[in-house]
Image (cartoon, rainbow, N blue to C red):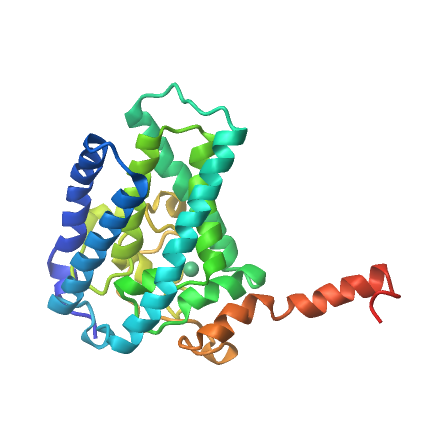
Length: 296
Ligand SMILES: [Zn+2]
Protein backbone atom coordinates (compact mmCIF):
# COMPACT_ATOMS: atom_id res chain seq x y z
CA UNK A 1 0.00 0.00 0.00
CA UNK A 2 1.06 3.59 -0.59
CA UNK A 3 2.61 5.33 2.39
CA UNK A 4 0.54 8.04 4.14
CA UNK A 5 3.73 10.12 4.09
CA UNK A 6 3.06 10.64 0.39
CA UNK A 7 0.12 12.89 1.28
CA UNK A 8 1.52 14.56 4.41
CA UNK A 9 5.14 15.44 3.69
CA UNK A 10 6.98 17.25 0.94
CA UNK A 11 8.94 15.22 -1.59
CA UNK A 12 12.25 16.58 -0.28
CA UNK A 13 14.69 14.74 -2.63
CA UNK A 14 12.86 16.08 -5.72
CA UNK A 15 12.70 19.61 -4.27
CA UNK A 16 16.36 19.45 -3.26
CA UNK A 17 17.47 18.40 -6.75
CA UNK A 18 15.39 21.17 -8.36
CA UNK A 19 16.96 23.62 -5.89
CA UNK A 20 20.49 22.41 -6.71
CA UNK A 21 19.89 22.59 -10.44
CA UNK A 22 20.67 26.31 -10.97
CA UNK A 23 23.88 25.86 -8.95
CA UNK A 24 24.91 22.89 -11.09
CA UNK A 25 24.19 24.93 -14.22
CA UNK A 26 26.23 27.93 -12.95
CA UNK A 27 29.09 25.64 -11.88
CA UNK A 28 29.09 24.01 -15.32
CA UNK A 29 29.24 27.39 -17.08
CA UNK A 30 31.98 28.66 -14.74
CA UNK A 31 34.11 25.57 -15.40
CA UNK A 32 33.97 26.03 -19.15
CA UNK A 33 31.39 23.20 -19.47
CA UNK A 34 32.19 19.96 -21.20
CA UNK A 35 28.61 18.88 -21.89
CA UNK A 36 29.16 15.11 -21.59
CA UNK A 37 30.95 15.43 -18.23
CA UNK A 38 28.36 17.84 -16.79
CA UNK A 39 25.36 15.76 -17.88
CA UNK A 40 27.00 12.50 -16.75
CA UNK A 41 27.82 13.93 -13.31
CA UNK A 42 24.31 15.34 -12.89
CA UNK A 43 22.72 12.04 -13.95
CA UNK A 44 24.87 10.12 -11.44
CA UNK A 45 24.10 12.55 -8.60
CA UNK A 46 20.35 12.41 -9.31
CA UNK A 47 20.36 8.61 -9.49
CA UNK A 48 22.27 8.35 -6.19
CA UNK A 49 20.02 10.80 -4.29
CA UNK A 50 16.74 9.30 -5.51
CA UNK A 51 17.77 5.65 -5.13
CA UNK A 52 18.97 6.24 -1.55
CA UNK A 53 15.67 8.03 -0.85
CA UNK A 54 13.79 5.00 -2.24
CA UNK A 55 15.38 2.85 0.46
CA UNK A 56 14.99 5.48 3.18
CA UNK A 57 11.38 6.54 2.60
CA UNK A 58 9.65 4.52 -0.14
CA UNK A 59 6.23 5.36 -1.49
CA UNK A 60 5.52 1.60 -1.60
CA UNK A 61 7.84 -0.76 0.28
CA UNK A 62 6.99 -3.69 -2.07
CA UNK A 63 8.33 -1.71 -5.06
CA UNK A 64 11.82 -1.45 -3.51
CA UNK A 65 14.54 -2.21 -6.04
CA UNK A 66 16.48 -5.46 -5.81
CA UNK A 67 19.50 -6.91 -7.60
CA UNK A 68 17.35 -8.52 -10.32
CA UNK A 69 15.63 -5.27 -11.32
CA UNK A 70 18.79 -3.26 -10.91
CA UNK A 71 20.79 -5.52 -13.24
CA UNK A 72 18.12 -5.26 -15.94
CA UNK A 73 17.74 -1.48 -15.65
CA UNK A 74 21.51 -1.05 -15.41
CA UNK A 75 22.15 -2.91 -18.68
CA UNK A 76 19.20 -1.46 -20.63
CA UNK A 77 19.57 1.99 -19.09
CA UNK A 78 23.33 2.09 -19.64
CA UNK A 79 22.80 1.29 -23.31
CA UNK A 80 20.07 3.93 -23.57
CA UNK A 81 22.35 6.59 -22.06
CA UNK A 82 24.80 5.88 -24.91
CA UNK A 83 21.94 5.96 -27.48
CA UNK A 84 20.72 9.26 -26.01
CA UNK A 85 24.20 10.81 -26.17
CA UNK A 86 24.84 9.56 -29.72
CA UNK A 87 21.46 10.88 -30.93
CA UNK A 88 22.18 14.25 -29.32
CA UNK A 89 25.65 14.44 -30.88
CA UNK A 90 24.31 13.48 -34.34
CA UNK A 91 21.53 16.09 -34.16
CA UNK A 92 23.93 18.77 -32.94
CA UNK A 93 26.32 17.97 -35.81
CA UNK A 94 23.42 18.22 -38.29
CA UNK A 95 22.36 21.54 -36.78
CA UNK A 96 25.87 22.97 -37.08
CA UNK A 97 25.97 21.94 -40.74
CA UNK A 98 22.44 22.84 -41.86
CA UNK A 99 21.12 25.53 -39.53
CA UNK A 100 22.48 29.05 -39.20
CA UNK A 101 22.03 29.07 -35.38
CA UNK A 102 22.09 32.18 -33.24
CA UNK A 103 19.10 33.47 -31.37
CA UNK A 104 18.46 37.13 -30.46
CA UNK A 105 16.43 36.37 -27.31
CA UNK A 106 17.82 36.86 -23.79
CA UNK A 107 19.17 33.74 -22.06
CA UNK A 108 16.21 33.69 -19.64
CA UNK A 109 13.72 33.79 -22.54
CA UNK A 110 15.63 31.07 -24.37
CA UNK A 111 15.48 28.79 -21.32
CA UNK A 112 11.74 29.30 -20.80
CA UNK A 113 10.96 28.81 -24.51
CA UNK A 114 13.36 25.84 -24.60
CA UNK A 115 11.62 24.13 -21.67
CA UNK A 116 8.22 24.58 -23.32
CA UNK A 117 9.42 23.53 -26.79
CA UNK A 118 11.27 20.42 -25.60
CA UNK A 119 8.23 19.37 -23.57
CA UNK A 120 5.86 19.97 -26.49
CA UNK A 121 7.90 17.65 -28.73
CA UNK A 122 8.16 15.03 -26.01
CA UNK A 123 4.44 15.31 -25.16
CA UNK A 124 3.28 14.56 -28.70
CA UNK A 125 5.63 11.67 -29.47
CA UNK A 126 4.70 10.18 -26.10
CA UNK A 127 0.99 10.61 -26.75
CA UNK A 128 1.31 9.10 -30.24
CA UNK A 129 3.26 6.23 -28.67
CA UNK A 130 0.16 5.28 -26.71
CA UNK A 131 -1.98 4.75 -29.82
CA UNK A 132 -2.11 1.09 -30.83
CA UNK A 133 0.49 0.68 -33.55
CA UNK A 134 4.19 0.54 -34.20
CA UNK A 135 5.13 3.24 -31.70
CA UNK A 136 3.25 1.41 -28.94
CA UNK A 137 5.21 -1.77 -29.65
CA UNK A 138 8.32 0.34 -29.06
CA UNK A 139 7.01 2.19 -25.98
CA UNK A 140 5.42 -0.81 -24.23
CA UNK A 141 8.85 -1.91 -22.96
CA UNK A 142 8.83 1.14 -20.70
CA UNK A 143 5.34 0.36 -19.37
CA UNK A 144 5.68 -3.37 -18.67
CA UNK A 145 7.28 -3.17 -15.18
CA UNK A 146 4.72 -3.64 -12.43
CA UNK A 147 6.56 -1.24 -10.13
CA UNK A 148 7.80 2.29 -10.66
CA UNK A 149 11.31 3.19 -9.51
CA UNK A 150 14.04 5.68 -10.41
CA UNK A 151 15.91 3.14 -12.53
CA UNK A 152 12.68 2.33 -14.46
CA UNK A 153 13.05 5.74 -16.07
CA UNK A 154 15.91 4.29 -18.14
CA UNK A 155 14.12 0.99 -18.90
CA UNK A 156 12.94 1.59 -22.47
CA UNK A 157 13.47 0.33 -25.99
CA UNK A 158 16.54 2.07 -27.53
CA UNK A 159 14.34 3.30 -30.41
CA UNK A 160 12.20 5.00 -27.76
CA UNK A 161 15.31 6.65 -26.27
CA UNK A 162 16.31 7.80 -29.77
CA UNK A 163 13.01 9.40 -30.84
CA UNK A 164 12.40 10.92 -27.42
CA UNK A 165 15.79 12.62 -27.59
CA UNK A 166 15.06 13.87 -31.12
CA UNK A 167 11.63 15.17 -30.03
CA UNK A 168 13.16 17.11 -27.14
CA UNK A 169 16.37 18.39 -28.69
CA UNK A 170 15.13 18.92 -32.26
CA UNK A 171 12.93 21.96 -31.43
CA UNK A 172 15.78 23.60 -29.48
CA UNK A 173 18.16 23.25 -32.42
CA UNK A 174 15.54 24.53 -34.89
CA UNK A 175 15.02 27.56 -32.64
CA UNK A 176 18.80 28.11 -32.63
CA UNK A 177 19.00 28.26 -28.82
CA UNK A 178 22.41 28.85 -27.25
CA UNK A 179 24.40 25.93 -25.75
CA UNK A 180 23.88 27.48 -22.29
CA UNK A 181 20.09 27.38 -22.70
CA UNK A 182 20.16 23.84 -24.11
CA UNK A 183 22.28 22.73 -21.13
CA UNK A 184 19.74 24.19 -18.65
CA UNK A 185 16.88 22.35 -20.40
CA UNK A 186 18.89 19.11 -20.48
CA UNK A 187 19.75 19.27 -16.74
CA UNK A 188 16.09 19.90 -15.88
CA UNK A 189 15.06 17.02 -18.16
CA UNK A 190 17.37 14.57 -16.36
CA UNK A 191 16.01 15.46 -12.91
CA UNK A 192 12.43 15.30 -14.10
CA UNK A 193 12.82 11.99 -15.95
CA UNK A 194 14.27 10.30 -12.86
CA UNK A 195 12.25 12.00 -10.09
CA UNK A 196 8.90 11.34 -11.79
CA UNK A 197 9.61 7.59 -11.70
CA UNK A 198 11.10 7.53 -8.20
CA UNK A 199 9.47 5.32 -5.57
CA UNK A 200 9.84 8.00 -2.91
CA UNK A 201 7.09 9.09 -0.53
CA UNK A 202 6.12 12.75 -0.36
CA UNK A 203 4.06 15.28 -2.24
CA UNK A 204 4.87 18.21 -4.49
CA UNK A 205 1.62 19.86 -3.31
CA UNK A 206 0.51 22.81 -5.47
CA UNK A 207 3.74 22.50 -7.50
CA UNK A 208 1.96 19.62 -9.27
CA UNK A 209 0.32 22.35 -11.39
CA UNK A 210 3.71 23.62 -12.58
CA UNK A 211 6.23 20.74 -12.70
CA UNK A 212 5.98 17.04 -13.44
CA UNK A 213 6.06 14.79 -10.38
CA UNK A 214 6.00 11.14 -9.36
CA UNK A 215 2.41 11.67 -8.19
CA UNK A 216 1.35 12.67 -11.71
CA UNK A 217 3.50 10.15 -13.55
CA UNK A 218 2.34 7.15 -11.48
CA UNK A 219 -1.14 7.83 -12.86
CA UNK A 220 0.31 7.69 -16.39
CA UNK A 221 1.59 4.17 -15.60
CA UNK A 222 -1.71 3.05 -14.04
CA UNK A 223 -3.34 -0.14 -15.31
CA UNK A 224 -6.67 1.70 -14.97
CA UNK A 225 -7.24 3.31 -18.36
CA UNK A 226 -9.33 6.16 -16.90
CA UNK A 227 -6.34 7.33 -14.81
CA UNK A 228 -3.72 7.07 -17.54
CA UNK A 229 -3.13 10.60 -18.86
CA UNK A 230 -0.20 12.87 -17.98
CA UNK A 231 1.94 12.36 -21.08
CA UNK A 232 4.22 15.23 -20.05
CA UNK A 233 7.16 14.28 -17.84
CA UNK A 234 9.07 17.48 -17.17
CA UNK A 235 6.10 19.89 -17.20
CA UNK A 236 2.35 19.29 -17.04
CA UNK A 237 1.47 22.37 -19.11
CA UNK A 238 0.75 20.57 -22.40
CA UNK A 239 -1.44 18.01 -20.59
CA UNK A 240 -3.37 20.97 -19.18
CA UNK A 241 -3.64 22.59 -22.64
CA UNK A 242 -4.65 19.40 -24.49
CA UNK A 243 -6.97 17.95 -21.82
CA UNK A 244 -4.91 14.96 -20.62
CA UNK A 245 -3.94 16.31 -17.18
CA UNK A 246 -4.90 13.91 -14.38
CA UNK A 247 -4.83 14.33 -10.58
CA UNK A 248 -5.92 11.79 -8.03
CA UNK A 249 -4.91 9.17 -5.49
CA UNK A 250 -1.96 6.92 -6.27
CA UNK A 251 -2.96 4.06 -8.59
CA UNK A 252 -3.36 0.63 -7.01
CA UNK A 253 -1.47 -1.08 -9.87
CA UNK A 254 0.99 0.06 -12.51
CA UNK A 255 1.93 -1.74 -15.72
CA UNK A 256 -0.03 -2.49 -18.90
CA UNK A 257 -3.75 -3.22 -19.27
CA UNK A 258 -3.23 -6.68 -20.81
CA UNK A 259 0.22 -8.02 -19.78
CA UNK A 260 -0.41 -11.44 -21.38
CA UNK A 261 -0.25 -9.85 -24.85
CA UNK A 262 3.44 -9.03 -24.35
CA UNK A 263 6.72 -10.69 -23.33
CA UNK A 264 7.63 -10.43 -19.66
CA UNK A 265 9.43 -7.29 -18.48
CA UNK A 266 12.61 -9.38 -18.11
CA UNK A 267 12.61 -10.88 -21.63
CA UNK A 268 14.81 -8.14 -23.08
CA UNK A 269 15.65 -9.86 -26.36
CA UNK A 270 11.95 -10.48 -27.15
CA UNK A 271 11.13 -6.89 -26.20
CA UNK A 272 13.87 -5.59 -28.48
CA UNK A 273 12.39 -7.61 -31.37
CA UNK A 274 8.78 -6.62 -30.64
CA UNK A 275 8.66 -3.50 -32.89
CA UNK A 276 9.94 -5.54 -35.84
CA UNK A 277 7.63 -8.52 -35.50
CA UNK A 278 5.08 -7.34 -38.06
CA UNK A 279 7.46 -5.33 -40.22
CA UNK A 280 8.72 -8.42 -42.05
CA UNK A 281 5.31 -9.72 -43.25
CA UNK A 282 4.10 -6.20 -44.12
CA UNK A 283 7.26 -5.50 -46.11
CA UNK A 284 6.81 -8.82 -47.96
CA UNK A 285 3.19 -7.85 -48.72
CA UNK A 286 4.29 -4.52 -50.26
CA UNK A 287 6.93 -6.26 -52.38
CA UNK A 288 4.34 -8.82 -53.51
CA UNK A 289 1.92 -6.08 -54.62
CA UNK A 290 4.39 -3.88 -56.46
CA UNK A 291 6.63 -6.52 -58.04
CA UNK A 292 5.14 -10.03 -57.89
CA UNK A 293 8.23 -11.62 -59.45
CA UNK A 294 10.40 -10.35 -56.58
CA UNK A 295 8.12 -11.87 -53.96
CA UNK A 296 8.67 -15.44 -55.09
ZN1 LIG B 1 3.93 6.21 -21.66
